[in-house]
Length: 499
Image (cartoon, rainbow, N blue to C red; front, side):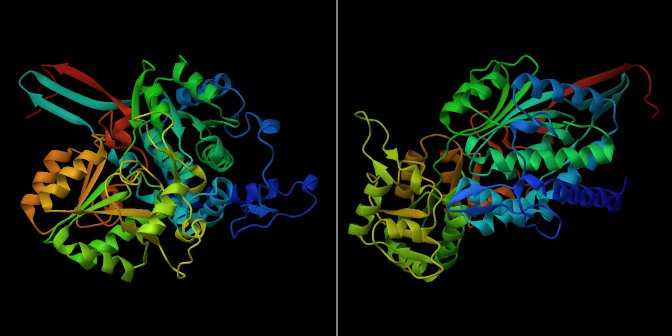
């Protein structure tokens, strides 16, 4: 099936979704975008959806009430997919990319209204860039040929993969995982974060309808309509689930690693930025703001704290203010710190994050401490010392603490200390190759970005491919279809070598 035929199927599914949403029980016609997808709306401050109740449609287009039912459906879909050519997987990948592209605005708005964190422009962009996630073209075959015959090594699917998706990027993470996992020949059962479950389920329904229309297989991706911690635990323990892919907090990451299954885990991070005396200060400021402001710093790779050498510190602070930053004075920083964190519950423990401020706009953070900022302010920033909780804690909000350092080595040492050995992401702005080398070796992070915003580490402004699952503690790094395969070797002894 060519790309034109796939687009036709996608359009038909979009139209059908629009028709099914106009139930007379709603009492009115839902608003829709140009593709017939109902637009989510906020009414009286509460999230409202024009799609049907999950429970009344359990098992409809991949949405299930129980883990057992979801795994059974995904298992049946895997058996069918296993008999199909790779070309069918290619169609599935293209369908996901087309649906995300065509519904980016409606689905991005729906996700923001449901989760209430992040920025609308970036919610929309994260769906549009699903087209950058690699699919079946990333699969490969290795071969050895010699006097002893010929050997092929190919990459086969695991089966049903259990996925846990985060509230920070509910539908983008799910969609990216569908592209990677189904391209590799797997099917999925997803336990979304409860605060992003509604939009995740809407995406799954749309995907499955289009898959069935294109290749005749339903439930390539299944999802728990009312997810809980208990349903996540069931997925971890289910015998029908062969592999796990988890994006979430430390607790769910530990649970996956203790499951006894192969697990691809996106662990915690606290990405530091080093700016040395050789850096292009204007470019560094623009990059820090771009990264820290992206979706209001919800990205796990986002710039969380900056260690800048004393000789360029004041110039960097001034440049931040010229490119969308608003500098807080010490009293304002103290007030924001008190609003954002509570003291640890036990001696030596972590400060307790105020989750009501996570992912909020810079203007909202400022308002919380009685400060008004100019329109267009992207981030708040200011000078702190390392004792401020914003430095050691992985906060996900657009305030960036800057710490003054004696020299480049002091900055690199502090970056290493406050990344906590997570091995996630490190960033440096420098023209000194030696400083880059020293930091890269010391940090030993999965992503190491030089002279750019953090997103460049995922191919957004730098080279490479995109994924919303970055496996740090388990070592797979930026995931791709091969991440979700197992190696199989086929050997022909003494024959088939024709040279």
